[in-house]
Image: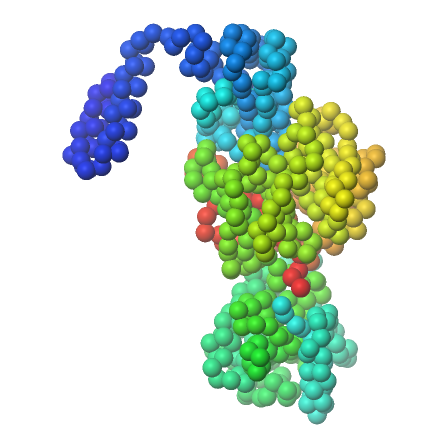
Length: 168
Length: 457
């Protein structure tokens, strides 16, 4: 379905602005990536950053105004620690984020608490603290922009960003 | 640079003499613009700004007397800026010049009060504009109580022609102060964060403008994530947060030269900076190992003092105007509340006790209020309380109102308001300390984190 849509979009683009090569190239990459996902053509290698980011999960979530590591988050972080312990050359930045329902300064402090909570948990699982840098973004970098709990719960997050691993 | 001297009040035949007297002082530096209000037999004309319902004062700004006809356009522009300042307070109603019927008399003569009464003007502003041989503009003005038949204030201002808007603001300040008894604030600036781009990828810039939105300019920064700019008391320097190295850190930057310095004297991330009223120290928060405490840094010798030491989030410190105390927010009691401590640290007294969370306290420059953000039942408010926590009043409510800052006279607050959802865009708003006159402050893009400067010199 998605592939069909992408194909139609490409035809439309070709018709509409065949001179714009950049847009065409982008569309082509999108459709290829979509196809791969739909096919489910295998997991990424277990020591790859892709595995860390997509299979283990690069992030954990927090309750409102809390930096407690939930049981579910612990499950993710244990796996993150395992991956990091298997890849001792990789360093990571842990980002702490908050939702939009707090003030700027407080949310910076809250994000720092969350990043530190993730760091502490990974350390407790044997990851050397020298490999883990923390940063808070407060409410400055939401991933979801609706203004209800479904988005806020996605924004209250701690993200373990592998060095060179792209943007959260 | 603007030179201001008082113009003495006068009774007709003394006018010439007194004008000469005033001009003698025209080369002195700034003199307090306190008019010599004549204590007449009746009450002095005065707008009661604290009243529940203020009827705007009918005010006439007469067409300026021109010493040089080529200044007519400039005179109209100055008049428009004065009128806009006054009308922004909702305390004045300007009577259009088309409705003025009074016979034109010299600036140095007694105006025909009867004619001004006839059109309902209660306050009258008369002005004369000229240009000195050195090129500077000279604007003289007098404010009259029409029914009392007396001058309330008079002043002469000298400034380079590009500073004509500042002359206008100084005149508006003189009128406002004479008629309200409150301190001036129009000749001031606002530093804020300009926001563009979608909510999940905002690009933020440092911006500076006059309080009325004019003369907007962007300040050079080296990160697209900058936050919470704060003026120094001489308004020549700002503190702000930038993510230059990937983490939030406090920077100090000169407005004139653009020269900047990272104040990295503490491990960890630093934010929530503010100057002391004397400008010799700054306070800020530092997060170390997930814990956020408040520090004070003396700028001259870079001496660092830790003011709080609790496992709680202690942040958003703000000095009292005498520099002796600091109000800040902390969740040490379980939720965000306001506390006051000495400028050197020590014990802290909680001052907020209502329902909800209190944040971003800011001591008013006049010392009589602390403004704050309050979050209660999912709504955000700007509120004020006395420094002991009494007499709390919420002035605004919306999905997100945050970050109050005081006008130099402690009568008006600016803050930012952001709408819900992906399309929500922050904008600057202002409101009187009484809760009246809520209005947007115009900016070209999204705008947040305003800080009002002190009155300009």
